[in-house]
Structures are given as structure tokens and as C-alpha cells.
Length: 207
Length: 207
DNA sequence: TTCGTCATGTAATGGGTTACATGATTAC
DNA sequence: GTAATCATGTAACCCATTACATGACGAA
Image 1 (cartoon, each protein chain N blue to C red):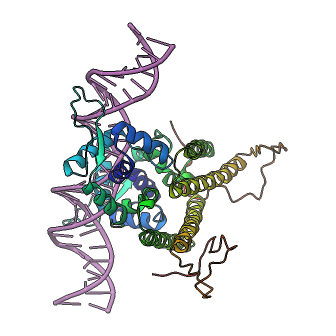
Image 2: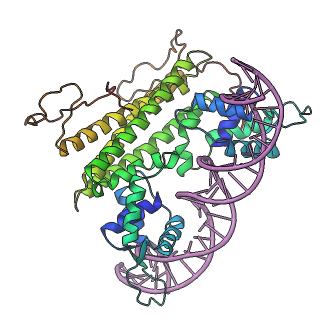
Image 3: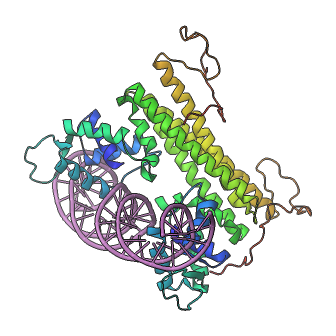
């Protein structure tokens, strides 16, 4: 998580730790911020591993401004962190961070990740449905119920957002592939923006 | 977080670890699940602290079914975990878990927590606005932009959900206090059965 | 010269997960 | 008698936070 963020930011330009944190704070601060207590150790761990290196090895008598830049090894590690990764808790938690670096990926890879994410969210929705139907037996707590319902609404909103991202990627690939209209694949209609499925409960499901 | 969940579940009835996890999984599994590697150590930590105790100290030659129940000290610790707690990351992260135990709180306390949460989310929205206005300078990454926008929509949705919860609590307190309609505040409606806490005893709160 | 912010770092702690090990019970 | 699931536990690790310490630098 942290390492992905560091590598991604250093990919744009070399920076020192303090600056990294500020960049992170006002680019992705809405989702996430790191403390220095995690940042500096992570930087040196990456350095020892050869993923980043000091930019100015010149002598700072005091320890000011350790500027780091990403190495070739770091670049490939970055791509791994961005695309691989078992599912587990963190891997799905860090999806927003991944998306923030999507511009570094090929459209096909983006599509794959978006659909993996969507299927994860659909599983989560199923979990919610089970929770609700099973709540009908037994004494029902209204707060828990409201909680689950709201969580499911949020998840549905997430899914429809993913759908717009997915169809945007499909369009960029030249394949509109709308689910209900197997018309001629050529000719993307000129006035057809917002073309794809927008809101909740899309019918089709791969898997 | 885990301790709050354990105490809250044991408040309903005595259980052993395995059962605790299953309860958690299908009541709040939509949000959260624990691994046994965290659960069992937490249980014994709570036992050493005196917050829970074995229900059947009878001799199990093997180690089967360590049934625990909550103690008086555990009850008061539960209320602390539920209501106190600095803001920080976890404290705001565990809001759903708190809400799941709202029925154990007085309406005034619920209101206080809901409004604390709302103000936190509003701060987060501000953070998002800053992020957006400041993204207008500099090269704008469309993915990051979409990310922040969607995050803000979600947060707004959360806030309006909180608003319904808040006004439900206000109604239960006899104070409708709508911001635009200062109608007569008296008269708690006699057929108002929902929005009242359901079952599960003990509403009192010390401290 | 003092205060704010830049800048780097460490130690202790928190709050979990993964993987593994062990064995008892139940269902077939 | 064997497989699934019940049931408890440990060891190693992961990824971060909080609190603290240190000191340089610029501006008022």
C-alpha cells in the first residue's frame, strides 16, 4: 500500500520524504494519509531493496533532504504492486490507490482490474442479501438493518460507477460491446454519450 | 474494535469463540470478519482483564468449548468503547460497528455520536473540495478526479443517511426540531412504535 | 530571537492476518 | 472409518499509528 504510493509518486518525479507525504496528502488525502513513522522506514526499505535510490548522493553533513528517485527495478515492482496481489483484505482496500495510478496501465489491464473489482463488490452484495434474508428470522435490530441496507446501497453505487469506468475503457479499446444490443460493432454512434448502463442492478454477470 | 464486538455479542448471551465468530460473520459479515488468530488471544486478554469470564469452569479435560460471558466490569468497558474513543483512524473506521450496538445507548448519546460522525464526514467533504479546486492547477489525472468525485458522492450519501438517523432520534426524543419548519414540538405520537429501541434490556448508563 | 515549518528519524504499540498444528465430534 | 466441520490455539508476519526526539532554516 504505502510502497505502491511511494513508487507511484516517485515515478512522476524525484522527491524527498517530507514532500512525498505532502503530495500524498493533497492528491489522495481524501482517502488516505501516511504518518512519517511509516514513511521514512518504508523509503529506506525500498532503497535497500534497490527499488529507489538517492538522487543527490552529495554530502549533506546534516541529514537534510534525502531526495529519492525510482530505479528500473522499482518501476517493475510498481507494476507488480499495481496489478498483482492476492485479494485478501488489503488488496481490495487499496483499490482507490490503484485507480489513482491507472494511467500507467494498458487499457486491457485496466479493464481486467475493474472487472475483478466489480465481481468482488457483487460478492459483497450477495453477502448483504444473505444477511438481510437471514435477519428476518430472529429479533431484528433496526440499527443493524439500516446499516446493512445503507452499505448495500453504497456498494450498488460503487458498482454503477465501475460500470461507467468499464464502458469508458471498452470505448477506448474500440469495442463498445453493449450487453443488450448486438448490433454492428462498427460505427460508434456520435450522439450516444452516457450510452452504457448507468445505475444499479445490471443484469449481466460474468464469472 | 474486536473487543467492542466481542463484548457486544457476549452482552446478548454467553458464547464460545467459534460461535462468536460465526455470529459476527453473519450479522456484520458485510462489513467485517475476524480471524481466529485474533479472536482467541483477544478473548483471553479480556478474561485476564476481568471483562469476561468462563461460564462453565467445569473440567474440560480437552480444551473444548470455552464458553465466556460478560462481567459487570465488561459491561462498563463496553459502554466506554462504544462511546468514548479519540477520533483517529480506527475510531472513525469502526463507526459501523458502533452503530450495530446503538440499541444499548440512550437516545441522547446516540445523537451525540451521530453528530460527531456527521461533522467528521463534513470535514472529509471539505478535504475533497480542496482536492478538487487544487486539481484545477496542474495536470489533471482523470482517474484521480473520478475517484475523488465518486468518493465525495459516497460521503454525501452517507451524510444524508446520517440525517435520517439523526431526525429519527430527535423524533424519539420528542424534539422534531426541523431546520425549516418550527411547528409545535409537543405530542409524541402514540402509535410511534418503530424508531423506539426494540428489545434487549438495560438502558441505563453510568459514568 | 523566537516561532513556524521544513525535514528526518526511532521506539513502542495497535490491531489485525496467514499459515500452521492439534484434536474432538458428527454425519454418512 | 473417513470426511466435514467444530473448536482452540500459536508463531510469524504485515502494515500501519502515536509519541517522541532532534535539528536546520526562514521570516517577523
